[in-house]
Image: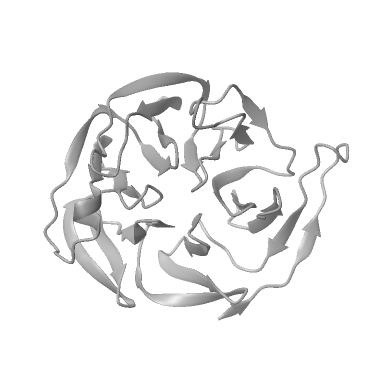
Length: 255
């Protein structure tokens, strides 16, 4: 168990646009926050969960882990899909390289050929290990869902929003190409959208709402350094630097 000790990371900028972050012990390649929980995996695929401000090592190995309304899911380096059930990892059918559990009890992800799939709510809550996936048209390398729908990026780092996604109809209805270039994108439970550019800069999608789920523009956040992964939940932005350092940033009061 790794105890977290805070070190304040300060970046130049005005008080109005400065994002204050704490560097915390540990080293991860990917992190995911949702439903008040935080999970991550390191470069050797070991899995960690944040418990009482400490990183606790879990059994097993994954290349990608996700936590949200749909529970905790992950995928291995052989693209095997697992869900965390009764404090243990249960293997289910399917082959994905990236998975997301942030939808309203529906799961989505992409496979090694960048094909996009999802699991409707009835499949997610089922205790069965053989599940029925729904195929989604298009090609993405990363796909993430939240309150107002799903976002993804393709092999050319183009950004897309998926309309019409519902817990019982996770495939949605159509794509919209959103101006911008991101290497990965993550959607918070409240609909917030954050991403990392191919250059390692961190962005937030401005003015995302139920009436305008695609928002208006990308806002570059004033944080020091370059990053490879981002996740957001309950007013906290989690960042993974290129060297694996972990930063916890206070974005807003989760009141």
